[in-house]
Structures are given as structure tokens and as C-alpha cells.
Amino acid sequence: VAAGPKKRLRLSAHPCGCMVHLVSNTGDIVHIPRMGDFVIGRYPKSCNLTLDSADVPNMISRRHAVVVSADDSVMVVDCESLNGTFVNGRRVARETLRQGDVLMMGNPAQIPPEFRFEVSMPAAM
Image 1: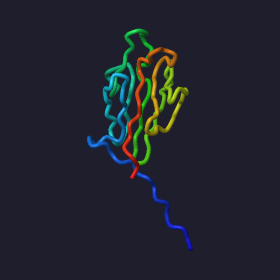
Image 2 (image 1 turned 90 degrees about the horizontal axis):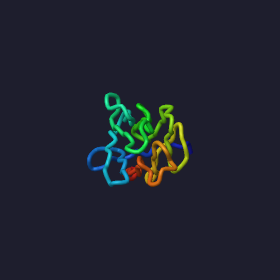
Image 3 (image 1 turned 45 degrees about the vertical axis):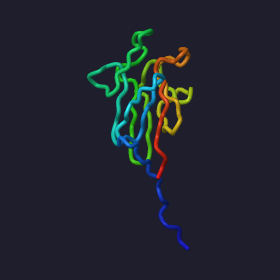
């Protein structure tokens, strides 16, 4: 018997229609659109989310990272930032995000971290 095509899991959406939320240390929710690129950085004219450190000027690059979402996955891509993008404490150039991952930008040794987000995704369908 020949195997049929593999069924791909598709991520469902939060009630707001977003596929991913980034939840900050303070509980603020960043809504990531269902499709396309979401740019995070210091430069407001080219970023969807602007971050700027109160303690360390220029810790966040002008264009620090991009969250790329498609129907079946969400990925963070570091934009060759000076201080790095970290998933679960590990510096990454590109990484697929999963429910519960911790995304940090800037100085990972900073306590408490200034730019720490928990990844929230609805269950796969």
C-alpha cells in the first residue's frame, strides 16, 4: 500500500488572529502578524517593534532581528546585530521558535534581562 501525502501541521491563530505573541517581562504582549516579517530594533522608521536600552545605549542594533512567520513555522533571524539574539540562552543566527521558548536581545548576562520575551503560540491543528 502506497503511503499518502504527509499531513503538515498548521499553526492555528490566537483569538486576535496572530500566530505568535511575544510576552515581555512586564506582561506586555507583542502581536506578531500571521504572515510576513516583523522587524525588531532600535530604529523606529524601519522597525515594527522599537527597543532601546535605558541602561546601555546602542545595546540593541538599529535592525536587530526579524521574526518571520508563515503557515507552518515561526523563525527568528538575527540581522548581524552586535550584541546578539538568543533563544533559550543560546546565541542564534536563525532559529525556529516554539511554544515556551525564551527570546532575548542584547546582553544575556544582564540581570534581570532588559529585553526578554516568552514565545506564546496556539496549539497546532
